[in-house]
Structure formats: C-alpha cells, structure tokens
Length: 534
Image 1 (cartoon, one colour):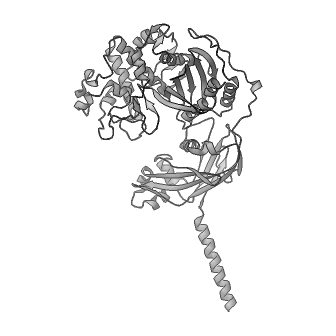
Image 2 (image 1 turned 90 degrees about the vertical axis):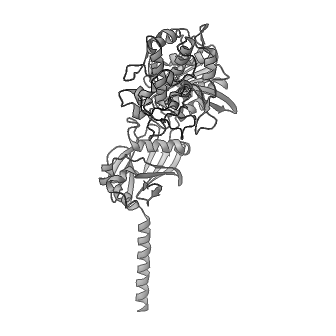
Image 3 (image 1 turned 135 degrees about the vertical axis):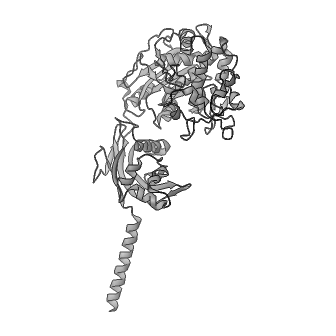
C-alpha cells in the first residue's frame, strides 16, 4: 500500500515537473531556410557569406492578435495592430545583441489577426530592403550583429514575444524561438596580384595626380566591394591637391554614370544661396520669410513664422514643426511628397516653439523652401541661373535635376551627375570658393558654410554648417576633421579641413541601416590609411 502511494506521488511529481517545463517552453517555432518556401523543418546550420540568403518561417499556436489581446484585453481586437506587434530578440553565442519592437502596421493587421505560419526574408540579396523583416535584420547587424558575427563558428538564436504600448511597453512570454548554427565566411580572400586599379585619365580641368598612395589598400577596397563586404557601392573617387588620385567604379557604373545621391543635392542649395548673395539677389542669410512671402495667406500664421530666417533653413534650426527623423512629425518629408504644392505644405505647417528652441532638426521641406525662394527672386528662375552662373564655370555639363510639382528644380535632393563632377563641387569648397582663378563663391560664404554653426542633436562631437555636416575621424591615432555632404544610401562628398583631400562615395543602399556606417568603415579602414599612411 505504502509503495503504491509512493509510486503515485512520484508519478504526480514527474508529471508536474513535465507540465511546468512544457509551460516554460514556447509553443511556437522558428525555422530557417535559404528560400521563400514555407518549411516544416528548416536547416540546422548555414555557411553565411556576403551573398547568402536567409529566410525564417514562424509557426505559432495562435495568431499574434490573440497574444496581444491577452496583454491588453481592454483594447478592441481591430485596434490592437495600432499599438502592438512582435518584439524580436537576436542572440549570438548565448548573448543578447539586439532587441527591437516592430512598428505597428507591418505585418498588416489582417495578417496579425489570421496568420499562424508565415515566411519572411532576413537576407534577400536580390530584393534588399523590401520587407520589414529585412529591416529588422539590418538593424540587428548595425547595432552589434556585424561586430560579433566574425569569421568562424557562431550560434544564432531568434526569440519572438508579443508587445503592446498602452501607453508603456508591455511584453508577453516567448511565443516562438529558433536556433541556427552559423559558419561565418564574410571576409573574402584577397589576392592583390590579380586586382587591377582603373587608370587615371584627365577630365576637363582635372588632371591626374602625381602623388603616391597605398595601392594595396585601394585594391583591397575594390575586392571588398566586389565581394559585397561593402554593398551597393557604385563609385569611389579621390582628389588630392585638386588632382585625380584614384577613381574606381562598381556594380555597372562608369565615369559617365549619373548618380542619384539623394540629399547630397541639399548642399548645392547652400552654394546657390551664396551665389545669390554674390550677385545681389539676396542681401544676407539673416533675411526672413516675411520679406519674400505673404505669410498671412497660409495656415497657422504668426509674426514669429514671418521672422524665420534663411539661415535657420540653412542650418535646419527653424521652429517649423518638421522633423524627418520623427515619423509622427507633421512636417516629415513623407507627408510632403504626396501633396500637389510643396511650398504651401511647408508654409501651412505650424511652429513648435516648445519642442524646438532653435536647435538642429533634420527638415527636408525647409531646404526645398529655400530653393523655391531662390527661384522666386532670381530672374529666369533657379535652374537657368545655376546652369549659367554655377555649373558652366565648373564645366559641369551633364547633370539632371528632379522637380517639385510646380516644375521648380528640387533643391531638397536628387540632382544627378557623375562622380568627378561631384568631386569638383567638393574641390570648389576646398579652394575656398575659387575655381580656375575665378572667385565663384564668396570666400566669406564658404567659411561660414564650413563652420560649426550648430551641434547635431544626439551625435556628440558632430556639427552642422550651412547644409554641410561635420565630424572627425580618428585613424591610427590621428584626427581628420571633415565637412561633408550626405545622402540616403551612403552617398558622400568629403572635404577635409586640414588636408588637401576630397573624396566622393556613391552608393544605392537606399534605406539600409548599414549605408552610412559602411561609408565610415571604407574611410577609416582603407581610404584614409591609403592616402596618409602609404
């Protein structure tokens, strides 16, 4: 009798432990594969190179909305997708590297309410950037994944939890988990003897530089770009003392290719503003919008709006309620593009005098407004003025503007030209505004443009001039301060303060989290050492 009771007690205890252990385990699974087909059983290990594709299939015991409803039972099911989503946790070798809450809206509410199994790409080299899942992976790589996934063996683990923000962050238990053994082989084998650099040839008034540089470093750069260590790069050009030091082209581009460098074009607006001051169309950057527009004809009029200065637009420090880094900002550029009048969109914006105390905030619409103001006051318009008085003296002939809905040259970004012409623009500033003995831009304007007008919010040690960025590289213990133009995708024109060097990088990694950090790595690891540590 006693032994029977003991057996029953032991059996109950074992069952209790089993049930408790089972309750702690996620009921859902994550499977991995190299294609988009839904897999019941995925791969267990993967060799990860720069050209590898990686997909995940998530199998849940119930739709995401059911989990969200448990976290926020007072919220209607149809509204849960507005306040909740998946939380992704990325672990490498047992250590949490990055955790992110997906923004509401992706996946769609209908999918959250119905789907219990779905497949999405983490890495899709042919369709990069088209999915929210790829964005999550790219953020993981940018925020530590790239550093820890060194060549060799690693263990990747991805964990999914539901979350809601109502109003604070509430996360649930693990609803799916998956693991994958990785053999990382991202660093290519470089055979320098087989790599040839492009010959340097004169280009209009640019001649080849006689200066030496570390060719092996630039050969390595070329190999890394071709092996997708650095992705979607289309050109690298360097001028030293105003002469072509090297020029390399990739991914189907050539010396004649017109590159879409996105917001690099904003800085051309600064140059054209200086040109307008030279020619008397503007008196100074302290002039106000009220001198050019009837502000009473627009929404949210106030005397303070009429006092917004051109300098505030040049330094992105106006009090317009516009911030491209805030998706909820009324003046976010994504709200401007669908409208049929961008000037009206911008002028109709309210001021936010509480949030903005004349500090820097990235405001594309303000740069468009600056260009449209120039177009308004210059006889014949901005486009013709730029062609005759700016591009022609620089021998920049083949270029292409984009346009606002009113047909005005779009100074918010997108002007296309070849890499050597972009380099000429940088060299003009390196020359303090002079080109071929002609003082094209006032030297005072160049000095003000390349100065620390404002600190950049959230980026210690970095500054903003007149639509120029500023930071300092540290390479091999030496500091290199640089002013630069910057555009989505990793596009740059670098003008070094204390060295006669201009570097142009063009790339098409639009919307990719790694794009700007990739440009920094090319500069710090290879380009600057090639020029200065030869």
